[in-house]
Length: 289
Length: 311
Image (tube, rainbow over all chains, first blue to last red; front, side):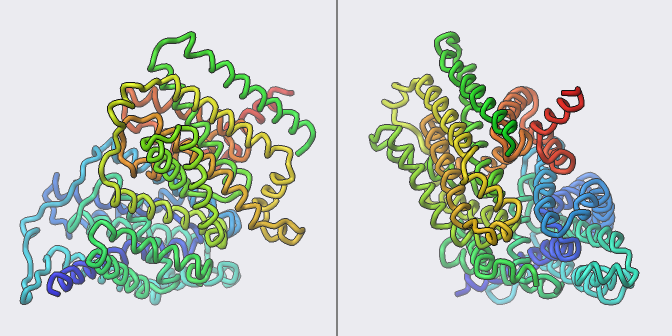
């Protein structure tokens, strides 16, 4: 019973990161109708950003977010200008398809580049307080992962405020709702696309930073994180930031439960099965609001 | 297709098959295992790329779970072969299992359109890979007696036959109503349905042909390698290789995937001498430029060059 409760706590902590990883993908998909399957590779880059800042400069990993997020935003601007600005010119059906292929190519390039630059080794950030735990009865909560969950929650709350109160945040939501109507009301749709893509990349970078602290990064984590984010997006549907975060925690808990029932190695399978079932039962439903 | 294009495609089919026939004499002329291994890789890649091309190029369904069928072919083929079944029968059984699995998952999977089909099949492939990796975590090695009797030339000729078979299957589709129907589904599924084309059955036929060939290729892989992890042929990189070769060569054409496969293996082997996985960087970048600038791949580039030179 105790072991199960412990697993569930770890599941919630990991699920918060799934939520953060998915929010960026969901924003980009909802607004641009672009399915960026290189999202996991962007997370991987964020992870390496924090790893190197901590290793080379000795910055605290949570403070490194202040550098990693702006750099990721810039990377997002660059990627949009170089690749995805061409994709959004097409109609919606072609957009999803083309972006899937472009994202796939980008994922390959980023993966190969990371292997060249940083080798295929698995790395994780070492901090003085890395081993600290909070003990609650028989349960122990790793401090670093708890802090990661808190940071994820703050970022997602911040995004929610941005989208509801900031001028451009409202423009982004209007574009997601109906880009033609948004265009008619004088919204610069292209700029809304650019901003949404940059914010999505920034969130991926932040998620990567947190992954490198509590867990580990290697060049090949991309596909796994892309799949996790896709599963959460399919579960949550589009349009709700908080809902996506909750769905992420749900996936973390579901994985922990399945690991307890079927054994650790099958924890990856449960999310994928949920994903396939939801997709097939509601082929467009959950995705297309 | 215009009559000229048809004749040109037939010409390509004949040229490729003649080239493959010429390769049959290679083991007699060259007694170097490295050369035969290299050509073997090209032949396996041609089969894999053409098989993927049937469902993605002709029927327009980007199947990102192709490795699952390659893996099933390898798993079933290897198991039966080690149990003593002749390799050709074992490979046939592997292909049958792969195609049967395709039929089972095809009906629900084809409820998904476009990119949703792609990510759905990607997830299916990963489910199979993880399950096989967990259930069969031991490395699979051939019995000593089989290793002692190993002849590279047997593998080579089987690969040659498979590559020829895949080219013949795709060329056979060339003039048929099947292909016209598949292309109609690819261009606009609703319009195809409205004009009396049974989209689902056509997509299923394409998937069965495609996965059957992939299953055979998996069986060949199992026959070729002395030892490997059973989950290795399920790795998504097999799907990605097929996708890259097909798109860079020219998706939806007969000779594009063959050109792509030859180029891919050459570059991969050449670059691997110096830098591991460097070919993925180059092919990833090449692939992005193909998708953005030249959707018809090398085949289209050659077409444009020919027009530019005034023919």
